[in-house]
Length: 115
Length: 116
Image (cartoon, rainbow over all chains, first blue to last red; front, top):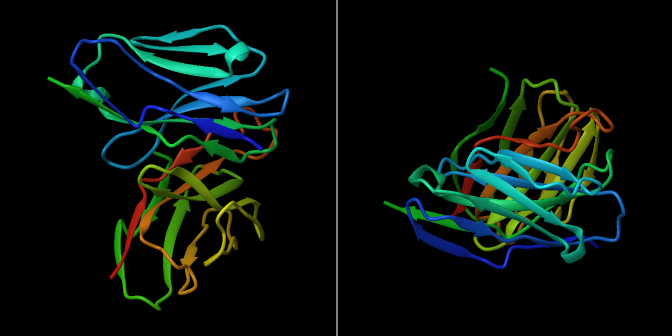
């Protein structure tokens, strides 16, 4: 069975601090995909990144970066120099091979950036 | 702009009543999904459909029903058999299986159902 664990329920930091959101996954598939979504107060989930299991390179997009480590089954998300607009609930998700489109989501981490 | 429209945004229901949540997409996506979100539990899959006139149960399908008569539409009915229907419901869509980016979901803004 597939499972995603986001152990941090809530995180609160002051603006401009760096913050890392943890994600640990479990799967028996050799091919799989990992995702991060952002849910602002409006409610709509916004896609941030997809990473397949064969690509362990870290990725950076502006202030966002992702660290994928198969050895520890983790796919952590770091926001550098956080801003108030980063306040949201962030979900990590796990999907199977292409064609198996069901995603399993973690419980989510509520991130609050205080001015 | 293409996207997913969910309606109504807020819905109140008396116990014992069925309610239907609407989901329409103009992204030309083949697959559509319904998720339920409860505080502290993340998103759980209710039903999904990969093609018109076909759908499969997700992890928590009991007390719910769906139809997929048109590619653009995937309505969800919350029946009186659903024992704890108060939740936030999210509809999503994606490209067909094996298409590039097939498992990237696009979400609607959600519908919040409250049972009185």
